[in-house]
Image (tube, rainbow, N blue to C red; front, side, top):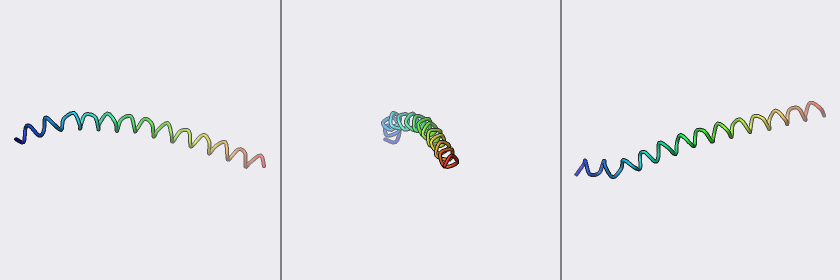
Length: 48
């Protein structure tokens, strides 16, 4: 019974690991974009 459960949950775990990897990549890109926009804002403030 337990092994059956494991087999059922295996695709889920694979899906979750894949999802977390893509999420990590997304968050890295997001962080980079936020950082760039922050830099732009800082420059803008310096100009003012």
